[in-house]
Length: 304
Ligand SMILES: C[S@@+](CC[C@H](N)C(=O)[O-])C[C@H]1O[C@@H](n2cnc3c(N)ncnc32)[C@H](O)[C@@H]1O
Image (cartoon, rainbow, N blue to C red; front, side):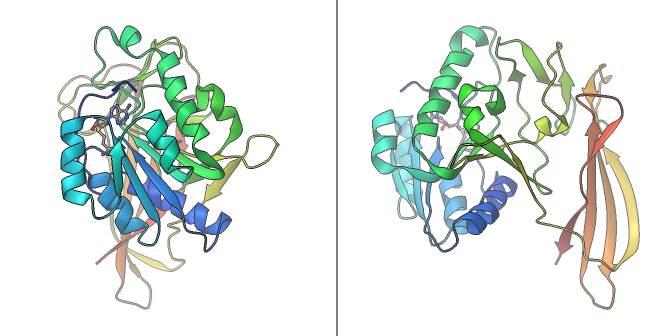
């Protein structure tokens, strides 16, 4: 198997919102059943450790293609999971899986000049098809920070989309159309992640910016979207203060046309009749398919 992403950067709890969403869905669709989970491209092991924490009673597997990084992963978190060298054969031998996480692996980032030659969409499709072949029906595939959109690949026809209020980004790297033309391009700024839209590609809807959790359909039927509410605000809140922030506020350069402006609105609150505090966050972004802003459901974030 070929190495795709060449950087090794990883962190603890990197894809927590996607993983918590997948966990909620899998607990509902297969209650009490132990899960087999694969971290594809586990790097030095922070993702495996995160999975162990979030899925304490399930079987965790991690595969990595780079020998040096693989050795660090085995040495540091080898007691938490089964870690093996990435190959189609080894992935199949340890599977099939109920959850596969492909985070920052199905990509070349930063995208080089010869991106199209080094990572054409056919290579993306082949890897996605290989992972799909090792995922059980009803299983969940998380794809974040990928150079192409999973929803555009041929195997995606067999998947439903799982959306939740706590997942509001599929990543921050360059995203390409299936002709390897730029679609979403990061804008250089002094802070946060900002995307600019390029070309005429029109996604299926505004949630294209966030869709990253997909469920392999167990039977025949039309594609569906399942919406989960995992962080609905309590009914009675006393608002203590509030403000809004745009992702463009801290940019130190002119913001180009077709920038995807993301607005974060915060309300800091106390739950009425208690001493519990937290904040309601409402996120919206420039519509990718029409005029105006696309608004997400508010979420509740307790503060200790
Ligand atoms: C940027 S890191 C991402 C690590 C982790 N998934 C995360 O999101 O924190 C990408 C890792 O994928 C590995 N990788 C690249 N191509 C791979 C392949 N074909 N199979 C398995 N791992 C691969 C790289 O060696 C690198 O360690």
